[in-house]
Image (tube, rainbow, N blue to C red; front, side, top):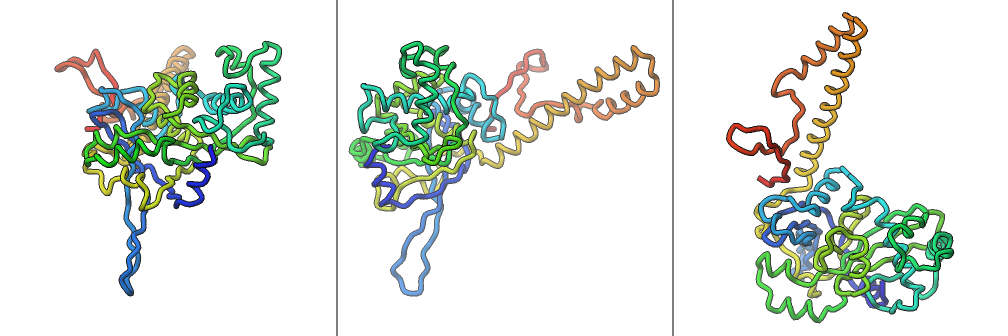
Length: 363
């Protein structure tokens, strides 16, 4: 994080944001954040008014997300929002340690340039950074490579300490002049909002057994950030990959998100007073309720499977009493209404259930 962003944090209010919901759109999948704003009045005996503002952030540019959440980015975020972390290739469990290693290695490398995108806060190495450097040297010194230049196999040899994200801060991108120029001609349409330059995200994280936190800036206008994202992010896109990565990591590590902005800032013009531009949006609560139902149905499916295996064993052993008990339990599920099914399942064709398909329909 550079000195300019530090100064912004000191002089501008920081709003704690909530994940209001998500939405499909003609430009891709969108996460909808909300935060409280206070309007100061000069009228005597009148109290300040509090209102809710909304901040849409695009995390995919897949045209298939126009009506149905179907991109890997949309489905991954929906799973995380519902409390399910698959930790697969789209968002691997080692993603955060790799970002930290890349940032530290970039700082001490000759190609590191102050004020460019992905970087470490401060002019000197902290105890957290020194601990990461030690891990890098232990794994890569014998090969004579840096983490930035190492192969995927060599990077996997680095054993990082445990770490967690303390907070995520959303602020102005590096090139604020471009943002201001875009905002001058802005109209309240989905296109005008989502096509503006991406925000800058700052992750503050802590390394186990260290005292000093590390701050990593992800600014999609920076070559350093884009070089890093192309290394680690699935299906890289310069407009969306930074936001997707940061918001997914915030869900994985369950950390608070803040928006740095005041009423006089150009950034506030990127917010909305309502969600009329996203008529198909769904609340976080609705997504989580559906996820709980899916998880419950999956668990019931495992129960049926285990009962059937137990029944086979009872029949093979000739245990009639056990066989009857298990059959009675299976009969509790022996109706269409009680069968474990997954919500959102669509059946292809009229009367043809041979080709089921899953979707994240927003209907």
